[in-house]
Length: 351
Image (cartoon, rainbow, N blue to C red; front, side, top):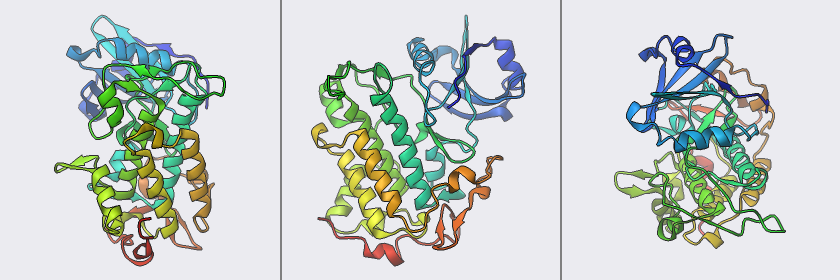
C-alpha cells in the first residue's frame, strides 16, 4: 500500500471539505460520532470521522488510532490520511471506501449482495490484514473489535480492516514467533463478537480476534447478525450443524455454491468460534485454509476483483460473473439464485 505522511488538519479545512458538515455529506454514525464524505483542497475524496463533543473518545482511543495507523501499512488495513485535534474537536481522516462496510452488504435491506466467491475474497483479505497485525506489526497488535461493520470495502471490493481505537499492543513474541502471552485488560468490544474466554478471564490474546473473525465468517455464510431477536449466531449455527439443517440457515442470496467449499468455510468458522482458545486456529492457519477453499472454487478468476471497473462505487458495476459456471460475484437480492436449493442440498452431514 501507499506510504504517506499523516497531515494535521485544521477544523476550517474539515468544514470546507464537508460543506460545513452538511447532512448530505454524512455517510454514517456510531457511538463515537459521525462519519462524513469529504473532498480535500487537492481533490482527494476522504472519510472524516468526527467525535461527538461529549465523547471525545476519552482522547485515549483517538490517540491509539493515530499512533497505530501511522506505522501500519498493508493493503487490507485502512489508511489514515490525517487528523484534526483542536480544543473542542477531534477528527480522523481516512481514505474513502466507496462500497461501505461488509455489514451493509450482508443486511437484509441490501439491494445487492455479494455472491459466495466475492465473500470468500473478502474473508481472505480481512484475514490477511489481521494476520499482519498479529505477526508483522512490531510489536504485534490485538485489534479487539473485529466485526463486519469494521471491514470496509474499496471501489474494487478489496476489504480493509478499520477502527483501531480499542486495539492493544501484544507481548513480544517468543523465539518461534508465536504470541504466547496475553494482555490483562478491562473487557471491551462489541456484544456478539466477544471471545467468551476473554470475557471471563479478562485475558486478551490473538485468539480473541480469531473468535470475532469467526463470527464475521458466520455472518457471511448466513446473512444473520451476531445477535438478532435474542438469538446468538454461534449457537444457532451449531444447532443447525448438529441437526444437519445447515442448508436452512445459509444465505440464499449467495448464488450457486459448491457444497464442499461451503462446508469447509463453515467448518473453519465454527473452529474459530470454539469456546476454548486453544481449539481455535491461528490467523496464518485461517489464511491458508481460505486460500485452499478459493482454489477449490470452479472457474473463479482470482484476478477478476482486481480488474473489474467499479470506480463509481456503484455495486451494480460489480455484477461480474464467470461465464463458464455462472458463479455470481454479486447477486441481486430480487430474483437471486437460491443457495439453499440445488447444489447446497448436498451439503455434507455434520461429522
